[in-house]
Amino acid sequence: MEMSIAKPFVKWVGGKTQLLEEVRKSLPVDLYLRENVTYVEPFVGGGAVLFWILQAYPNITRAIINDINPELICTYKVIQDNVYELITQLGIIQSQYISLDAEGRKRYFLEKRKLYNSKKCSSVEVASLFIFLNRTCFNGLYRVNSKGEFNVPHGRYANPKICDADNLLAVSKLLQRVEILCGDFAETEKFAGENTIYYLDPPYKPLSETSSFTSYAKDGFGDAEQIRLRDFCARIAEKKAIFVASNSDPKEETGESFFEQIYCQFKIKRVSATRLINANPNNRGLVSEIMISNIANTLI
Image 1: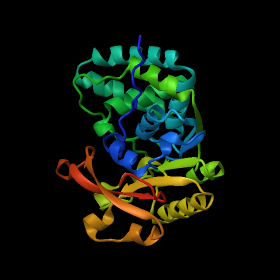
Image 2: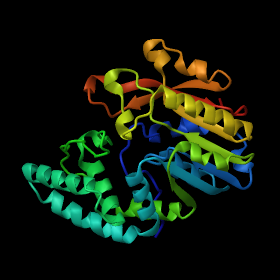
Image 3: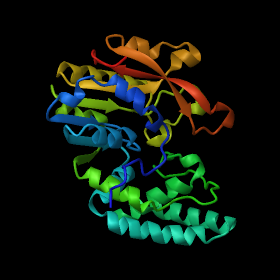
Image 4: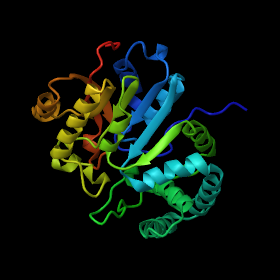
């Protein structure tokens, strides 16, 4: 039986599935021809670019992913090493949840959220709860409070697909090629070199007080962190690594030229993206985002 194409196993704020063609155009035109390429993604999130690039470029012989979210990274590792037990657990959760009425589902969700926040689960339990909560919470958000507790409320989905066994198996096969890390993005600088390509998708600079998703991690990701990321990009560029970085476009929304100022030595292009997750339905739709790179020979 032919293996399914691997795709993100969670919904993710700012996920790049819709922008994969723009990412492709931002990569070097000769990437297919290079040998022994190393790919590094310091903010892996939902993994849309990771899964696409590893399947599109078989000459990428080494991949390193990182994220500061320990539960997300635990889930990646469980899919990599223990996918069949995870599928079994998710199948049980899906069967139990789908059989309940609306009030029963809400109670079940809150019980599982409390268990998840207890930090007393096995790695497989963490992964199964992480996927379950993502598939059934409001708008697929990942948000934590100051204590690091997941606090997104229950969503209302008629028939959520909690256990996608075919995709989990495809993702597991692909992750056999991947080294999985958990920590600060700057720790991935040690992989920078002449044959290394980075894709950086940090928490975006918010365009308004209500549009911020920086509570993805309890310590946030403000302007000081954005500048620290710029310094990181400058250092890996000096080591002859190439990079593409995504972010919001405050200039388009508010006239603020924050990124033009801090990334003035690099190339910036604007792309259109569809914002599918927002607390205010009126703020969903096409928005401008930016892609920053040090790559000269791209398709556009």
